[in-house]
Length: 50
Image 1: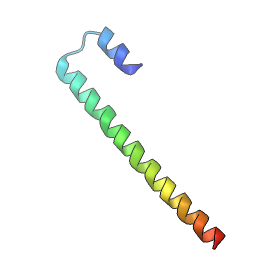
Image 2: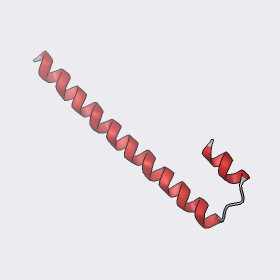
Image 3: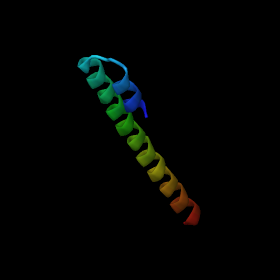
């Protein structure tokens, strides 16, 4: 969605690269947070069950 919006507007290639890098970093961050949440919830479940 955001990529389509950016490509329709006339934006320099450098700005587009920066935007893509930001999106990539955010995806990695989100994945990292999800992994941490998952491990915490698994630990919590284990402690409750034991």
